[in-house]
Every structure is written in structure tokens, then in C-alpha cells.
Length: 186
Ligand SMILES: [Zn+2]
Image (cartoon, rainbow, N blue to C red; front, side, top):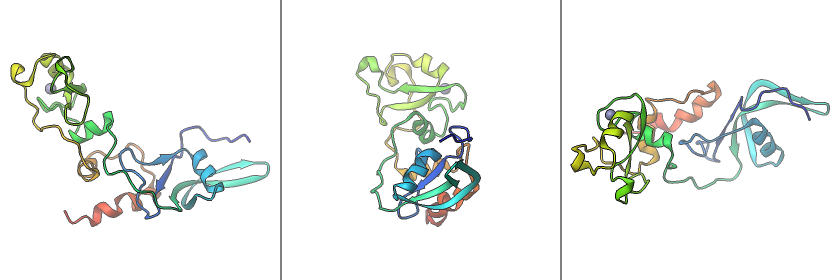
């Protein structure tokens, strides 16, 4: 089957059976190919579609833009430990000087001193600060992060995520993405 739609375009937002995204960070997106496969396997229901259509000689359908799972999957309690999520926790700011530029990561306890690559020991830092701190302990360098690094909850990342929306949000996704955020009492 030849399909004339570019790869990686038209991602499908995947909702759990309770109509919330299966995951927020990263946002649960499937390629349209995976989404269509799941439709045929009867694992998902299509809730919204793109205008684009895929065709083969025997078959034609609109690309799904939002699907929901037919069976509920228990969501992960904590967001994945990824570069993006560390930056999001730290609001895309160096934790030593607040610069938003040239961001990288700093191990608060340096790796050379046994520091681990974990939520509790990694912070966003600009390259100059990272270089300046080098292999020194925070007190030796006189550099303590503004915020003690911690493992964030999905809720923590939500709060920051509103300041940094993803690059691509199809209009059909918005009801589902902000549904529970808007009702949040906090
Ligand atoms: Zn800095």
C-alpha cells in the first residue's frame, strides 16, 4: 500500500479510556500509521480526524487526530526522566544564574565524586555555569542551585508546561489536553 502522506506528520493524540492523555510528558502521540493499525485491531475508538485521507485501491480513511483506548491503562505516576522534562521542571532556566540560553545539564554532586544521573542530582545549567562549576562540589564552587532538584509529579510539570506549550498542538486536541487542567482547583 502506497500512502502519499509524509512521515511524522499528522500525529495522533492518544487518550486513555478516561479521555485523558495516556501520558503528558512526553505527550502520548502515535504516528498515524500506528493509530490506524490500532483502529483495525479494535483497540481504540476514533474521536476526531484530520482532513487528510489515506487511500489504497481497496481502502480509504481520514487520518485520526485523536483516539482513545478501549481499555483503561494505569498511568505512570511520575513523568519520565528525560532531558525535556528536566528542563521543564527547571523552567528552561539555568539553576545558577537564571539564564535561558545555551542550556545543558549539571550534576550537582559531580559524577567524578559519585554523583548520580537522577532527578535529585541533575539540574538545568547554562554552559558557562556548567564549565565554571566543573568537577567541584556545590560548596567548593560557591554555586548552589536555586531550587533543590527533585522528582516532579505530572502535576508539577503541568504547572510549568502551561508556560511552554508543545510546538505542535492540533486544534482537535485542545479539549482533551486542557480539560483537567482547567478544572484543577489549585
Ligand atoms: Zn548559568
